[in-house]
Structure formats: structure tokens, C-alpha cells
Image 1 (cartoon, helix red, strand yellow):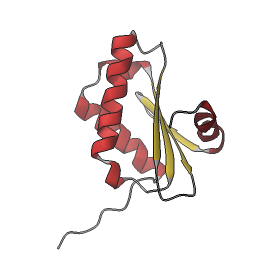
Image 2 (cartoon, rainbow, N blue to C red; image 1 turned 90 degrees about the horizontal axis):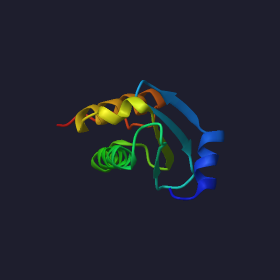
Image 3 (cartoon, rainbow, N blue to C red; image 1 turned 30 degrees about the vertical axis):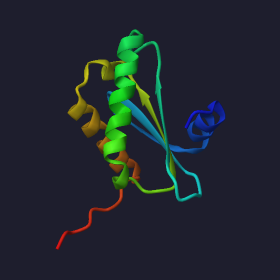
Image 4 (cartoon, helix red, strand yellow; image 1 turned 120 degrees about the vertical axis):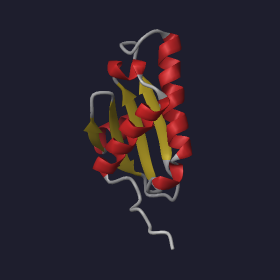
Length: 111
């Protein structure tokens, strides 16, 4: 997602869940395709730190995209505590919030 109106719609109409590092908002968009957006404010750090957090969040989503329910608009807002996280911790934190919001597909048994 790139448009401010799309972000505002998810903030206003969507469900949210938070932990110490992130706030995740989710809203069904009525299509077969999910959209993803990241917001990192200046409270998190300088531009290098903010961009690093954004890259980590986007890459974690990209690698786990098939786990998420299709047709969902997802916005991740980074908090100041996200500045010092490593790749695995970011992924674990986001997956935890996604499970709480029920936007992760149920696990299928492999035979």
C-alpha cells in the first residue's frame, strides 16, 4: 500500500493488535490479493535506523506471505523498541501479532 487514504481506512475500520515492538492493523479488502504497508515514525530513530526497520519488516512479510490469509490489508506500525531488533526477532514479533489477529492461515498437516 502506498496511498495515505488506504492507510487511514485500515487505521479507522480495521482491527489492531500490539506488543512492545509493533502495532499491526488488519482489514479485509474484499479481493483475492493482500496489500501490505509499513509505517515508521521519527521516534524510532534516524533515517538509517528507520529504513532498516522497514526493510526487516518487509522482508519478513515477503518470506512468509503464503502464511497470511489472502484479501487482507495489513499495516505495521513500528514502535521505538523495534530499532534494535534482529531479523528473527522481527519475524517472531510480527507472526505473534498476526496470529492474535487471526490473519494467518491454519497450519495444514503434511502427509
